[in-house]
Image 1 (cartoon, rainbow, N blue to C red):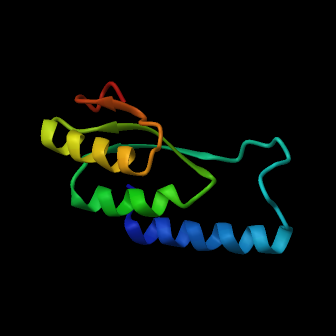
Image 2 (cartoon, one colour; image 1 turned 60 degrees about the vertical axis):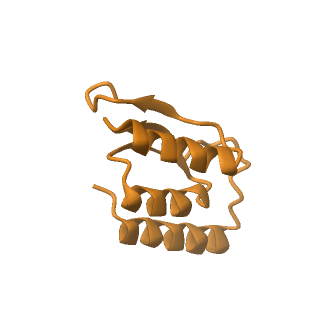
Length: 94
């Protein structure tokens, strides 16, 4: 499980690594971490804000059985004009 604190640690490590190596991720190497998230509650909304700022993270899928939760996530992506990842209602499909 990825927690908000873990994401912040990942972001800090990414910044340090990029500063130390001068890496700008334009060398063609795909070092992204692909994430699928199950459960789209308030904690996930906070987590997404952190993940959006990380170049090495790609959110590939989101899952929740609640229409309301999915609609909130859709609006977050729409406000930021970001492409929406695949949405699922069943975690087995993710």
